[in-house]
Image (cartoon, rainbow, N blue to C red; front, side):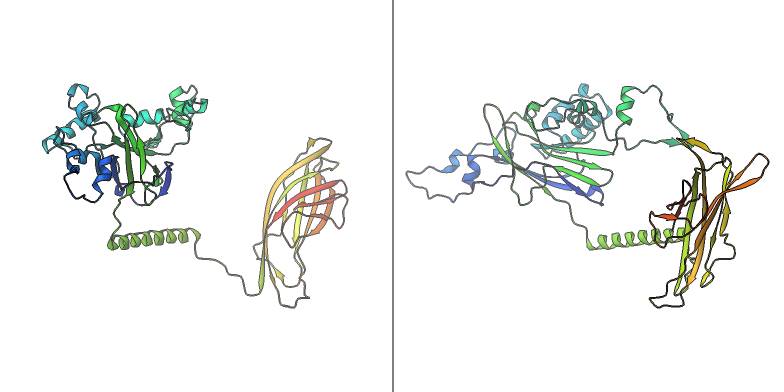
Length: 457
């Protein structure tokens, strides 16, 4: 049976899952492509005097006790961060002198237990977890492009040693900062670890030992089948993507005897049972309900509803500045006049205000006084005549600019009036009277002098 369809797309794929990553399971199938693979699927020939039995060409069992056919094909279901030892690691950790870190001693104990229970079940397929040294070296030497002779850029060299796995960092303990807010003399390690956007990330490698018979356990025969990366936001990156219906991936070994291997990677995670899905839906429903109640408690329920057919006007404004006046120590007196028909305001509402006295400062050729005085008011309009031709009268804003002299006497510097615009947005309005006053809710100005207002609702 010839395999004619290969999957050339070895790029990574990104998935997002809200389920615990510990439930992730991958099924990896590895097989060496040889002539015996094709002969196994061919129909059995009728033996004759001129025909030789194909069984005579089948390889003999190896010294390890496994048949060669079994070594040519292997299928393993692997969980997230599940450690499967390679033959190289088994030979390494058998020697207690080679164990240097606590993790090495832990692996030695696990390998001894495996040997007592009959040996490891996997032969060629194994894994490197997030804690293994291979993961650190691989991330340090990871290439950024597909070029055969890649020259690392300055940014790649600076980012090579950045590890995004600091999940257990604690900024405060007992209300006291463990580190200073400002580091006046940061070290190079400090710069690498802190001046980078850090997303906690865990990595796992699914490997294959593609060495010839009797030569398993050599580093030069190790190949990466699949790389898994999971961050704290539930984003799962798989490289290459799950095989599905796209065909197996192909690996060609180098050396004197080139071999061709094919492998598939499939998602073997078990589906949630109906009871589990129902329980999960109840948990989410309860969570969302509690969050809704929390938001409702923040907003409150004592809203004042507007009467039917009534318009409520809320105005937030600011007296920004005054410029172009003759004297210093300026202040602004303003008030809002509501039409007498159908307009009203709350009894506690103040429709007038007066700013503080402000000294001017030179800005180019003019003197400017900055008030930054905020004000607010509200009013209601009851529309009794609902005909389309009836247009309501609109509130009018009056302002007066005054100055204070050395003898505490005040002088009127300018005054004017402006109808509040009926629609929001920038506009320029001319005052009805006065010698130099303006509003900007623009801007309301007369001649060369003006007062700048900002009004919105």
